[in-house]
Length: 155
Image (cartoon, rainbow, N blue to C red):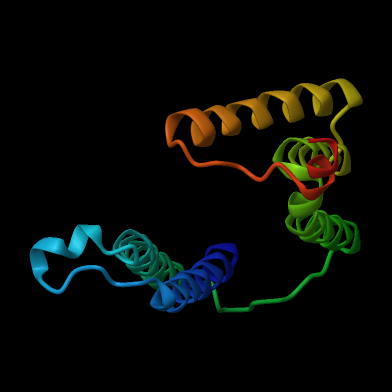
């Protein structure tokens, strides 16, 4: 049953990415410029994810995932997922105000703490993940990360 639900969620995510990439500006008109189209790679990944999710769903149905299926809701797990969802929403909003570094550190720290990690683990993870992603995007890909509105007042 878990594989069936997971594959359905991945299908929905892939469809969302495919549809959302429609708004990307097309730069090329022929097949040779397809790789320069900003929608190409998100759509390629969305298509691949959808195909893999279809295979997983088919396999789970063949194994009898829908026979005697019962839905059991674990309230503690559901509460953790809801808290994580709120943290991610706050991260999305907060990244514009506090910037990438502060928002990421808080997001990772709170996420690890919610799922039972110690304060020491949460501190180590938030520093390592924030620095690693900063290096990948800022230095590796040369993509500027948000600095936040609160820091503009100090310039």
